[in-house]
Length: 344
Image (cartoon, rainbow, N blue to C red):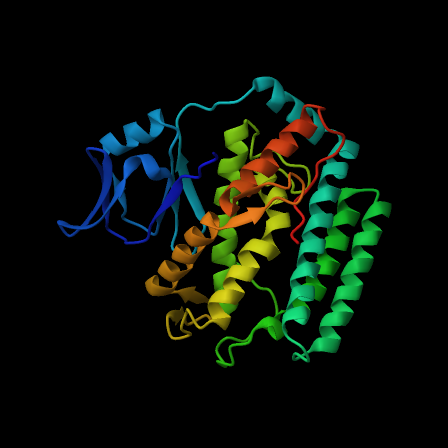
């Protein structure tokens, strides 16, 4: 039976996280606020500043393959602590050779982008099925048609630059109708366009945060199977940039992150009041909103899903590892192409 260990998200700034016997305990202002069985934790993510992790817990994590990641309050990656790197060096060498080969890299990148567009399209199609005579039905159908055309155009793409152009066109059409997917009529939950660094409205703040968490999960999955998350095939290599994690993340943005954010807003699980608008117009989530999003994210990872290729039921959080394994098989030459995740 496959098991998925939980990710412990620590969002309380100034907290002290330490090992207490067979448990991880969190203290704030000399008072215990939470405790978790240590064997159930696979990763610790510290959001915000001033969060301390004890030497004994750090030593335990390094020895047991538990990573400790530090992220600022907006979800931007700061640092990561992990023990010895495991994995087959031959796999990583094959990965580096493919990354240096434009033709082979493009073939993998095409699979990722095609799956991303198809999954975005499926989100729109499901919305139409679930909401008859919905707002913006004609516009949504038009965007779906353009995105279907984009998927067809991928076959004729000859370089990475052209592929990014196709991806951008599909993304523009997807987000052009994204506001029609929002059923919550709170005027503060209005989406006009995708913006980031910094996000300028509440929905973009939640999307950016969800994408940051997704990138952390994908990076961990790639490391688990021995791939280097920093050497990708679509995203350009930059120091400190997990390019491969960003590549694989593309196919999961719409079915995992976007749908979670839409669900929280439409079901009114989050309040538009629990956001902070800065003088420059930037919008940040307050602690209560971050807590709700992270709790929903953790719950979603435990939900069962049928892997479309393996036709096997598994927790959603294990899908990332299965995709990493399939990519590793392709890199080793065991399968002809990378079968990206297609959400049904």
